[in-house]
Amino acid sequence: MEIEKLMEDVRKGFGVERIKAAKDLGKTGDKRAVGALVEATKDSNWAVRSNAAFSLAEIGATEAVSSVISLLGDEEERVRKSAAKALGLLGSRIAVRPLMSALKDSSPAVRKSAARSLGQLGDPIAAESLSLMTNDPDISVVTSAKQALETISR
Image 1 (spheres, rainbow, N blue to C red):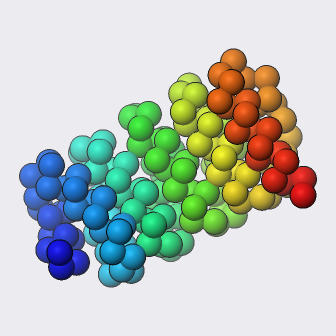
Image 2: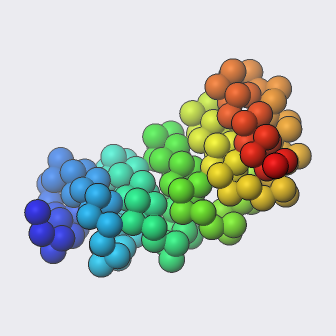
């Protein structure tokens, strides 16, 4: 499918079309989609916002890191989780402190993704925050925090 059609769908399509277009734009790897995906991070549909965050990471749109960081404060848990995951894939150190804050999210899925992403970013400044997460009530968060700490300490 042509990228122009996908960009139009993510902006003007019906719900399911926008959701699918936001996902498919990431698979294109085409930087021309960045503007449309940044707009989609503000969509009223949580699935569009979630797919847009991950697609920006798939494209490697480091210029959109601030838009993805803003999604860490989204009302929808699945959007926050996608944003946390995307920030690790984008590899920008600008995301370290926002991800450290996301370790305090009410959702274990978000905390787990934030811990993993901090491990991917490898910034030692996150070590203390990750150490605190080794006492998290959710075992998947503990495991991710320990793995991130191992990565950082290498």
